[in-house]
Image (cartoon, rainbow, N blue to C red; front, side):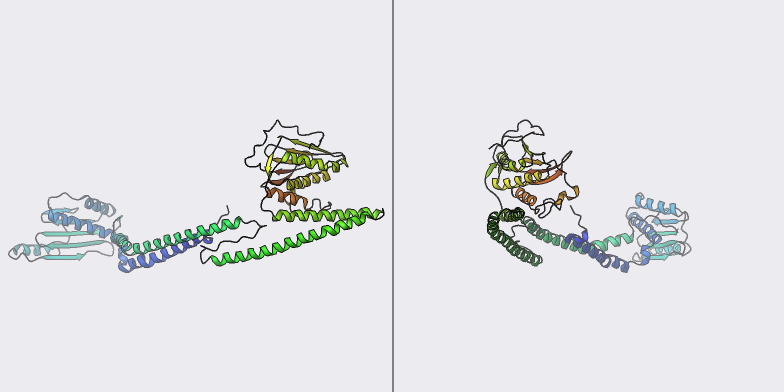
Length: 489
């Protein structure tokens, strides 16, 4: 099967355009909004690591506010351990009420900023519980990240971390959450829409391709010799209809041209037969002279050409043949008719059928012409005193072998073309083998040529058996060579 590149297919072109649309849409709908919403720092690995530390500390502080005696969460422990592992100078301190968690015994900025005095003042103001103290300070420097947060409403909460200089893995950072949110809220609608349009367009193409393939199969079934049919236009997509109409117009023109050619050749051949017969009769009435035989021979050759052309015209006009006949008896009849011709050069005709009868469907007169052409061709290539061997096996393979010079392997494929002669200086018009091929094709068979082992050529003519007709059981194989042939019936 011939390979079709994706860009030559409608599906391939649509898939490429869909991918381009998805790429442009992904940039306009998702990537560009993300770049516009998130600051450049959101994509900095160290900033994402600092955000992870901040989120873990805040989450732990919130959890301890409700349950001061609860165990430290695994997420907090893992995050702090990863930060310390990558940053040996990293320090963190968390105090919620009387509960303290951290890797340093005391905070570095709590007393320096006077938060201890603020806390004492807030504790002395129990009479005014609505007073709430809150403070946040960024402790980051160009070398590291850090922050401080103090909150005192119902109970004091203090967070402090600093010395974060090296980033560490952040599987669930702020940038990733933002990307997922923007993608599934805005981008997903676009992607689903494109996918739905692709599926709908694919369904439309599939439905129309079925119609196009049906028309293509019908076009492949057309017989080149019978162009009296056209492609159906009903149900064909409007985009393909002009092509179908153009093909139908071409088929119509070819049919008319073919009909005119057949009529001309048939009429010319028919009109030539009568004057050729009259001419030959008048030549035979002439006095004996050397030129007389040559003229009669020329008229005979032209008459043979006319008869062959008429045979080709008949085969071209036949769509099928009816009837059944015995191929064994037909072959014996042909060999009996050609026996006098072979006897003039002392050539023996041998026939070796492997079955008593072989019934096949078709016209016996046409098959006689095909066998006669093959045997006559074999006689012409066989040396005087030689032999032409004909065999028929139980599968309907009729083989005609001569013992002449054989075939040129480079020219075997063109032997059955009209007006082809091998060798080129051979007498005749090159129509005999073309007629054999046409008759074999008309009967659902085939013909082929090959060189025989040793010397000579073999022409294999295969015919299928008649449906529902039981052929005789194959008898033991006859010898390859039969020394003589006697016509039977």
